[in-house]
Length: 402
Ligand code: HGY
Ligand code: MN
Ligand code: MN
Image 1 (cartoon, rainbow, N blue to C red):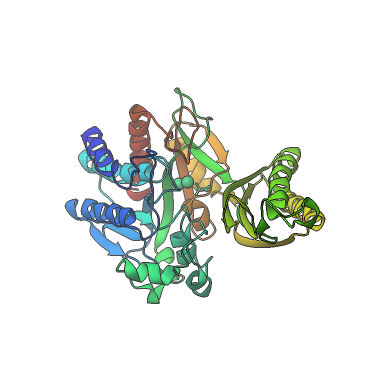
Image 2 (image 1 turned 30 degrees about the vertical axis):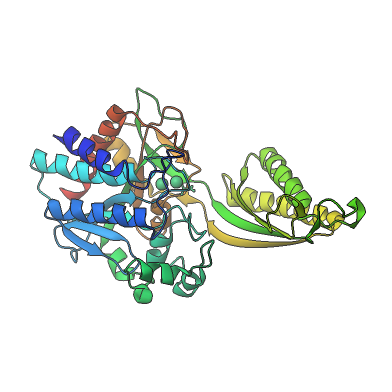
């Protein structure tokens, strides 16, 4: 039964927003694939007789019981993707949430608390550069004014994108009343590493590494690739290249991670020296002091090389998530209910990490045999996914049917 429900939902979502060329997903905030995912979520809610609700920040909720009642138990994740992302990061949590509810109903569970399934908008931040926009707005970590200033690569402002998609951006902002009614949030997610084993395909999260995104602007001078003497060049590509290499070295020396995964070049012509390179750094470390140290080291390397190249370097922090230590009593309760499963930290960010600063929050991870994520090759075995659904059902039953 649960198996059928999981399979049906999984196959419905599988083609949505998938690129035929890459096999990866392009479900970005407020684009047409995102709209299809949202329509699917609403349909799942309605077909189960749940109360469907769209909150002020564009997050979707499906309620069993009174949405205004106290001590709600909430589960869910996100349906958007990174550029050419995999099928599991996000959707596994949402599909498993509905499947866990189906499982609990077939068990005849009687709920003492409201139960909700949530789809948080724009978790990956692929379009507007800031991750977890839906949960950050709700938790008040991202202010309304800041959100209004966000623009995508084509210069479209976040509120305009929302409006074009048929949503009202006027009300976005902190949603304290909603959070005050939630007793616990549990997010199930595909593991984005290779810690979990066949014997233990489900684990509980202990912590999330602090992480952030920084934009480096390297300002040089556009000029002819064939006629400009080497000594006359102010080529920002050189400064950028040195900075990328420095990021790898500095991070590795400190036991941290630093990645340039996105770059924009102006004017982007083969036979022209670039005038501007924008490179986005994603950096993460086990503690905040190390993260700060690594980013400062990379900054210094960029500035030093910039001086040699005649390139002006500007650095802007676009987003930052401090270390997250998940609620210990809740985490222990989940681990105990699941019979002593592995407890592991992660370097990946999640809406659960944002909410953890405001409400008791926990995460379940489902084994990823290759560890690959943020790629079309991301994969989990169906049998592990079903074990995850049962685990989620068990913990929801424990929390909502006391
Ligand atoms: O980027 C992250 O860590 C997450 O997957 N959004
Ligand atoms: Mn992700
Ligand atoms: Mn995710």
